[in-house]
Image (cartoon, rainbow, N blue to C red; front, side, top):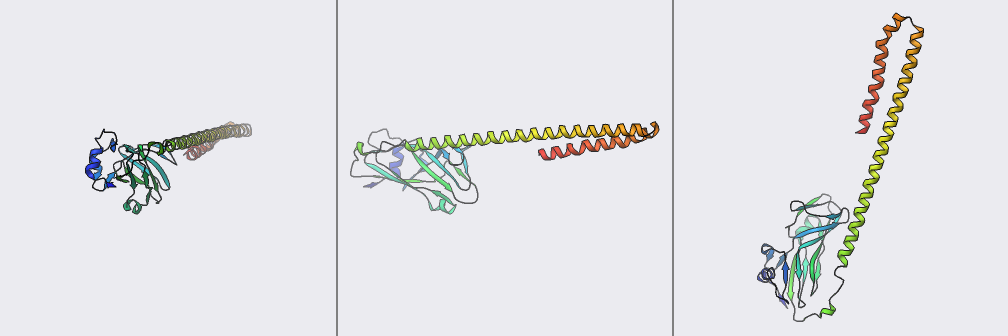
Length: 245
């Protein structure tokens, strides 16, 4: 069994030879003496559905789990296998990153499961070394027929989860929108009813004063009536906009 060195990983970045480890879409600066640091790409959040880095960064909320895909695409020969291992520093930051085994003959991107079990949101960089892969060449060649043929099951499952989450989020947004519209409709209805009552009462007061007072005294009460009407109209307007906020 041979442990791959930094030169082997750099060679794998450009390899096109069948039977050799090939790492597509990788970078030499992520190759190190004891392994290769993966870069994260798009992922699926169990809270938000599909997520993608913005300006090379992505935020993970407390108690959120995101299953990322690596940027790199691996073509692993049948005589090669490895491990994807997390770092102690990630645990210090209260990030749990699941390790995984890389089967002989594996073809595809690696899945990186990241959980933030802290109390604060954390921002991750796509180039941040969350997982380090360590690869070995073995003395035995695994029979191609013995290699698992259900490698796409994880992606199918994650896509189903993302679709369910996005559908639930859309339903929640639609429900919230309808509730807001109903509240707005009730506010307008209440406002119209209030204004009708104010106008009715005002009309009754004016009618009573007009027929119970002399013309001169009635004219003198007009400023008082106007002041009452203004106060009766302004107060609910202020309350209406305060409630709306």
